[in-house]
Length: 410
Image (cartoon, rainbow, N blue to C red):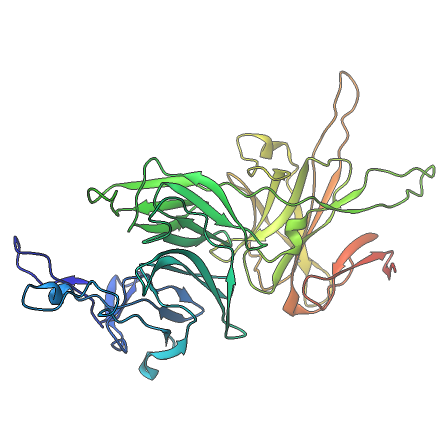
């Protein structure tokens, strides 16, 4: 959008069909092919080398007294198609594909192979909390739970982004919502004040809210809000009768979060075994900059940090299978809220072992349960058992097989 009026004159705003790309390395802009229509009043998400837009064009020059008002839904042109540009081959130009809605002032977010179109105003000038989801792989649209924004404005001019594998939305009113793996929204944080028509950007497990308006005056303030992890569903349980003294120990616990795909499509991390410490867990996850890290946290709570309880976790030993089939050991470095597996890559498998002292009373020795964690890409096929008792990903995404002494347990 660009102002067309002279300074001090009535505002004349007009959407443009220009498209440019910025290269942070060279700090330079490059022209892209013009859009098939003036760019709409919405964000343009990026996914896997593509840029996409949907919404409507704005031209308030028609609001001049000698022209028909451009603020009526029968005059405005709402679009029922989205546009996509292949950034690897921009000369191919913008392509369109159908969308099952006509809305403006909405937010569009790319996350885990899907596009989320959130809120806005429809062609009847009705404000909306609707959320439509486009699956890039199947090229199909579906609806999920509405964003639970309150007030008359609902999710008009909502801001949204993807953070740590989740969609985060910030409608007017100040509340911040996160989308769970079951496609339901939960309030996870709150801005210090209400704003809309703002931008929301991800940063270091937080979101940055920039600009916007309160509804009464424009804002030039910037606010950073930490987004906590959502509480996890009850853990899956596996009961195993101990071969020692015929007793049944505490159930081996597999955190549910490791069976979903929170950060990368077709990728999951699996905690193979935790014992005797139901409150904490250890797992491997990938980062936005393509690294693998070991996390340590109480069930459903914030990551443990250093200085703090992270220092109580024995430095993990981590490895992957080398080309010769022998373990290739990773260097492990302690950071503020994780252990970094140096040179480990998300596209390759990784395993880790760590221990944490618990239940020390008086002069008695503390217990030291051992944690094992595994990272494995589903597209890499079935994994190989590496422990006496191991829970191993199969060739089917999200499916695991229990092994004991190298043999599958039915």
